[in-house]
Amino acid sequence: MPIIVSEIKLNPGEPKEKAFEKAFSVLKIKPSEANSVSVSKISVDARKKENVFLVYSVAVSCENEERIAAGAKAKNVVLRKISPAEIPVLKMPPKLRPVIIGFGPAGMFAGLYLARAGANPIVFERGAKVEERTSAVENYWKGGVLNERANVQFGEGGAGTFSDGKLTTRINDPRCDFIIEELQKHGAPEEILSKAKPHIGTDMLREVVKNIREEIISLGGEIRFLTKVDDIDIKNGKIVSVSAEGMEFPAENVIIAAGHSARDTFAMLKEKGVLMEAKPFSVGVRIEHLQSDINRAQYGDFAENPALWAAEYQLSYHVGDRCAYTFCMCPGGYVVPSADREDAVVTNGMSCFARDGKNANSALVCSVSAEDFGGDPFKAMAFQHEIERKAFEMGGGKKAPAQTVGAFLKGGVSRFGKVEPSYARGVEDKKLAELFPEEITSVLKTGLSALDRKLHGFADPEAVLTGPETRTSSPVRIVRNGETLEAIGIEGLYPCAEGAGYAGGIMSAAADGIRCAEKVLEKLM
Image 1 (tube, helix red, strand yellow):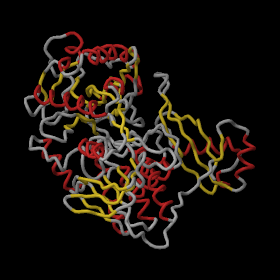
Image 2: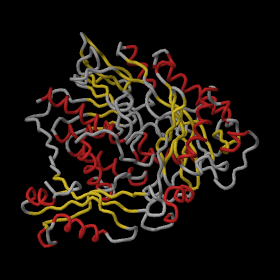
Image 3: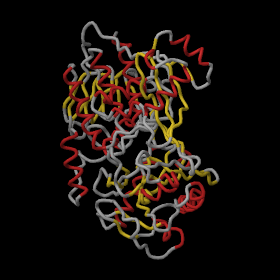
Image 4: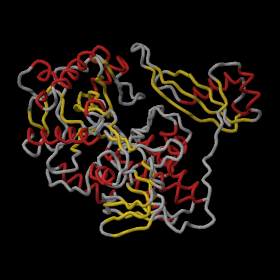
C-alpha cells in the first residue's frame, strides 16, 4: 500500500531523482527511511507554452505509511491500495472446454484468465498467427494481393496489432492495472507502468501477443488459427456446440470476441435469433500533419526539447446533433491500408514504439447515430461498406482517395508537398466530398475550421486527408444481460468487447474479455 505523492513539477530535462527528493520533502521523511521509491505516473503539462513542465506522481513505500501520509497534511498525498488479481483455480478441467471466438485483446485476456484458472480454453481465430499475418500485411502494403484471412482487421491480436498500441482508456476498472502489468510482463516496455498516456507501438505489440499466446498454450489452452466459426447450435435457449471449418465442437460456454469487422459473423448470429441493435459510430478520414508542426503547436518554444516526447492531441467540436472529432491519434506514425476484402479501401493509423515517423496522423470523423439507420445494424454496416467500395473505385482499385485540406475546403487541385501522404499503396487526388453524404462532408469542413482554433495549424492547407476511416467502432451491439453478461435469451453465449458493442480500444476490450471470463469461471467452479 504505497504512498502516492502527485503533482510534482519538474522542468524538462531535470532528473527523476529530483522528483523523489520533492516527494520525501512533502512526506517529511529522509531518503533512508524509504523501502522503495519509483515513478508512478508521468505526464506533460503544456497548457502554458512558455512554461512547459513534466508532472510526476511518485510512489513511496516505507514503514508506518498511514501515519506518514496523514502527517504530510497535503492534498497531493494519498495511500494507494494494491489488490493483486487473484484468479480462482478449478479443482479439475471442465468436461466441455470454454470456447473463445476471436483472439484480439478481449479473446487474448479471456483466454489467459481461463487458462490460468485451469479451464483449458479453446480459441478459434479466423486469421493467422502474428508472424504469418505480418508477412501478409506487409506484402499487401507493398502493392500485393489482399489476403482475406491475414490482414489488418483479422488475425492474432486483432486490429490493434497494427496500430499505435494505445493503452489509454476512460473506463475506471481495477482490471486495467492487471492488464497493464501483464502486457509489461509479456514484453511491453516498462514505461507503460508509469506514463499517463502509455502506448506499446505496433513493433513491440507483435511480440507481446505472441508471448501471451505461448503462455495460454503452456497452461493447457489451445488456439486454432485460420479457423473461422461458421455456425453455433442453440437448443432450448442454450449453446450446445460451435462449428468451425466443417468441424463441430460441443460447447456450453462461448465467449464471442469477434471484433468490429466480423460482419459475416453478425449475419450468422442474426439468423440464429441473437438480439442485436444499432449503436453510434463515426466515419471520416485520416488527417496528416508534420509531427514537428504538432510539436510546435503543443509545446511552443519547448518543441525540440529532447526530454519531451512526440506531442499528441484530442479534439472535438459539436455541429448541431453531430460531432466532428479526432480519434486514434498516432504521433510519428503512418496511415495504413486496412481493408479486409478486395473491393474496399479502409484506412487506419499506426505507429511504432519510438513514434519517430515524419508525420502525425489521426482519424478526423463525424458521428452517426443508430437513428440514421432506423436502428438496423445491418443497414449501418452496409453504409460503411458502400463508402469503402466507393473509395476503392475512386482510387482505381489500389490507391486511396486523398486531398489536401486546402483543396477539400476551398476546391482546386491538391499539391502534395510539405506533408507527403504515408498511405503505403499510394493516393489519388480525388474530391472527398464525393465519398460521403453531404451532411457528413459539411460537418467535417466545419469541424476542420473549428478545431484549428483549438490547435493552431490543424487546418493547415497543406495537411493531407486520406479516406475513408470507417472502422472507428462497431455499429452493432449484441444485447446482453447486465448481470450474467449472456446474450438475451441464450444461456452460455457471452457477447464480448468491441465487436459486440461493449468496448472501444485495447484496454476496455481486454477488461471486458476478463469480465466475461469471470462469469464463465463462476459457472465452472
